[in-house]
Length: 517
Image 1 (tube, rainbow, N blue to C red):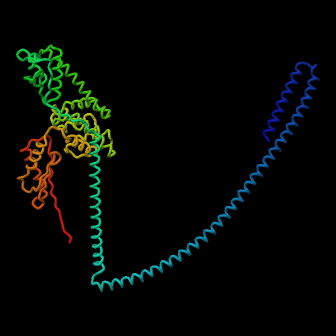
Image 2: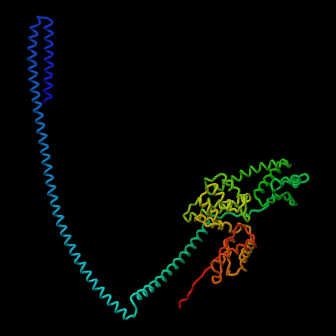
């Protein structure tokens, strides 16, 4: 309110100052305007008074309004405080009621606890009486039986233990027999299914190739003047040319199928070309080598396409193709690998394993045979090194390493590949090694241990890759078993010639038998 009055007074002061200034101006201008100045001054005073009165009235109205608003707010605050006090009072009343209720509940719980305590005391008293009666009865039983409580307890526990042991052993034996029968049945079914689903033709590889000639005159041209042509062919290709009385035919002889193939293509091209001399022979040989290398890649790619495999290093694909020109006991190595891959995929599918991974392991299990004539070491070692070099999965590496039993199989796929390898190799007609020679070799292997003391029986298993020696347990102890294994190893190495490795396993078994009557 004071600010409003000050502002009004300042305004009135400004008006008055303006009027006074006007009057002065009018006085300066002349006496003729004096009356007008006085009139104006009087009017100004009246107007100023009027404005003053209006301002005062307005200020009073404003003060009245402020007073009314302030009274209203105070009233509302008082009402709110009153309501808050009422709520607090109600809460205090509720708290008092709750305290009373809790007090009653606590008294009830105390009463219940006292009852329980009294009951527990009564129970303990009854238990003491029962224990006293029990001890009296035990004492009477001990006097009648003549043995103590502990002795009786020991006898009962021994009887129970003996009974349960027999029941558990019989149960385990029954379950083991059932499991063995079921496993054998299931294994036979899966093997038969795999063999039925994959039945490939068997073609025996030979060590000679026959090249047809248009006429017998061509034999002389192949031989050349003083035999220079035939010497050049044999020197470059590493293949023996057999030119005999066979009409219109030349025989190429070599244990290396790749060399025979290159020599065959070179010779056939020379015959078609008609120009047979050392320089032309060298030119066509170089050209043929390039063509055969391309064929090798195609063989590898076709094998992958046939098996539905992808993402293999091109260098490894080329090595796979070289298997086409390798043989094992007359069996084509690539055909054998594809067959093992197909069988492995079938068995893996039946067992719920990764089919593509099993096929990959089956295809690459003999990959070392492709270059075993170029690198020192067994085909297993070479294959493992190749698989590691080209970053093959660990399952594939283990399958290569363990398919001949050289290492322990760590994955089910490794075992599958080993089984399928044996299936492929043992198929009738797959390998040209006769049954008679095979049996003689196994008999010779079993006879190696005849003159070693302490040996009871010897069995050649795993197609001659493992020799199991059963010793007499009453004459040979555990330490002597290791010595017998080493003696057998040294004797086999000294007296026999064999491919790969032979595992010697010495078995010492002690059996305790009783007969119930």
